Length: 197
Image (tube, rainbow, N blue to C red; front, top):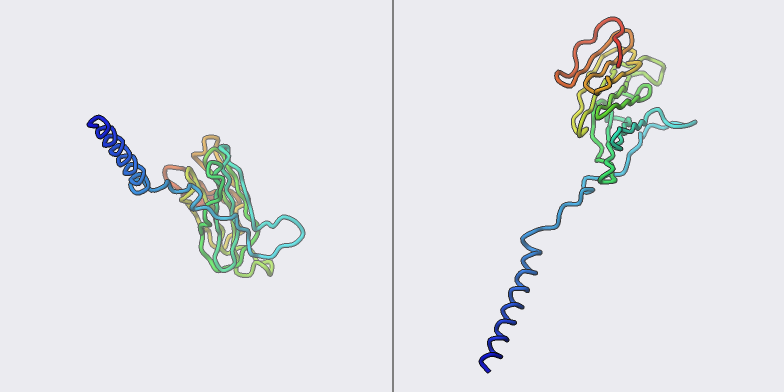
């Protein structure tokens, strides 16, 4: 009888400990946050375009499988999203450059390594054929959550962007040259053409 009582007490204690452990699991350790909780559908420009792919939307793929997309939003400016192959999701839209001026010309994106270069333009009377009044050169690196931007006023817009092989430097060119490097960001635009990488 004494042995039976001891076994029952032992089983009861085990059951009680097991019940406490199970209930504690749910309270002490909340479930891990879903990696896609900051996800958003890929947005497109809200500026009408017909006759083919819109120049107001651009996407570029990085070597590691990530993608960067940019588009124009009326009354807002230049918007960026990036895609993570691990999360299989696009980030929430982020405003790279705020302006209420009309979008002007298309968006150009280049990528090398973890560096992305972007060219975009806005103009007050661009729809009437006037040149841009705000020309954007932008560079994003690493996590793509912070972009360096350079705005040139009353300029015809950058024609091309070249990224060095190591992704440490970017050169924007037209009749002047604008340099960006990872350590110091943008310098002042200079006359003449640089040697892109």
